[in-house]
Length: 338
Image (cartoon, rainbow, N blue to C red; front, side, top):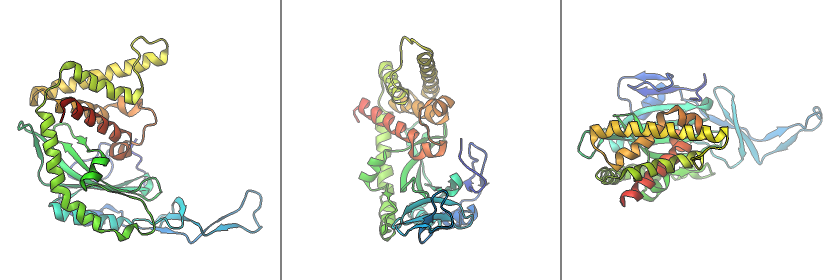
């Protein structure tokens, strides 16, 4: 489920989205130009108060409060949410301006600029020019910087590092906690004065090179380490049990039979991915980890089977899928002692 509706927009550089929506452009666009072409050049506005009637009391005095307000998409009139009066929106053009500064600093361009849920969540990805070669065998991670913002109160203004591997279009993201520690990721709540601290953009963009170098070193350490078959299976099982709970070895009912069958199919898929990539790039902890992320991103079992699943885009960026990738990465690093 892509959660794009008719009032959403998406522009992509050269490669179409998996759901087939959006407009693909062949030229390299800076974020401000991508923003202008995306159709997301609208604002959100706030009402000056909140008022209403209790059912059956129309015609009498309305209940009114100035402590809360409605957040409204200006061009469509859609009411996104109700927030306290001090809640401050970040406009789409302001996020585009931040993305422009980052792209200029790192020498990148806009890969995507889009929205989901009728504009309630807006995001952009900035692509760096150079990829990170893993293990010297032609396996590349291309660094991206993602900005995303919620107009409906469901999401703070966030940034995160991401990498897409051309060999399987797979996305890897460091834990947000690591991003905060290293100074290349932020999560800013929509408080009254949060827009006054715009120096974070310059700070974060200048930290980009150091952050990607650190991550490249971490990946290459993992790529040079081997794991035993038992360790690899343990890594995969840990991730599946995080998703589904303990795997029943001897099912006693239909539900447990389904859970076991799902996990067996998932292990089979991860094993096939590992064997395929190991034949090309060599067997390593990195390949074992990417067997997990390939399953999480591309398998219908992962999309349908996990309880409380988010939308595919939101889960991929900052929801359940992202958490599971981070869990898998931390477990992999622990196994190799990096």
